[in-house]
Image (cartoon, one colour):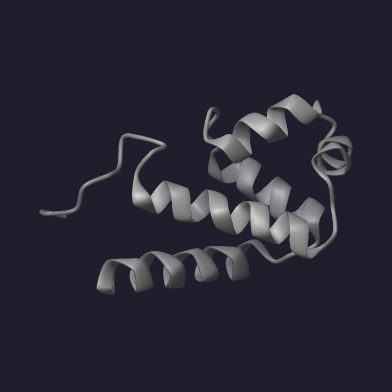
Length: 90
């Protein structure tokens, strides 16, 4: 599709919005980083790197994270799109 650009940086506004929502989702369900890490069978440092934008995640990892948090991955993506679109309008 012409005119569509994929952000190449974790420092893009879109990726920062994604990270804010991911952290907010974890905190909303009352889960600490080490608890999420244990649920995913990874170390807490990896969760920290993800939340700081040091390590990007793919779709498979996003689904695993949202399911570990007990939230619907599609609902999470819908919230992201709303936040992203809202930020682009303002």
